[in-house]
Image 1 (cartoon, rainbow, N blue to C red):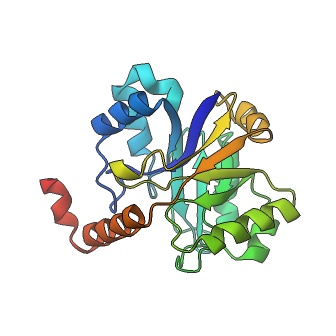
Image 2: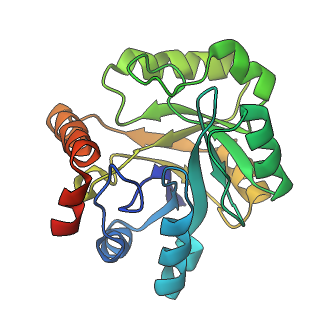
Length: 221
């Protein structure tokens, strides 16, 4: 079985300082498979797979795309998806590349980037994130789980890591991540592991806020 985290950011996201070399060491140490899903870019995933060829099979090229209606994650992307467009147009582009559509943190009321519930059903996403380790109030994760279960939607979990100490906080145990079809099949039988660490949670949010407010700090880290 493979430990899979479908929501990880690197320093190619403006609110993350996670270095790719450090990420490579963590992947080896924790025996992880993951999707690098930087905000509005696939550069983090592409550069990682280019520089760490021995770990290519462990990293899915993804992107957390900001649309006019909220955020969606594209997985198994071949090209970067342009942000700030209609969500239906964005999803069409993801699927035209043979990619999968994942809706992250759908019920987190602290995130203005979440998609509306009625819109999620219209989009018919491939996967719903039912546990996000960065969601401050766990009741929103519970709501996402109940929503996915009610509507028979495929579930996943994501650490939403922006810093090294967040990685490994949650993952799905799956058989195969080699292709979109294999991943969907594996998630149907997956089991999930997750834990909440309140100190790490608030520390991570505080660090991300600092990076957003003072982006030049990243050059010193």
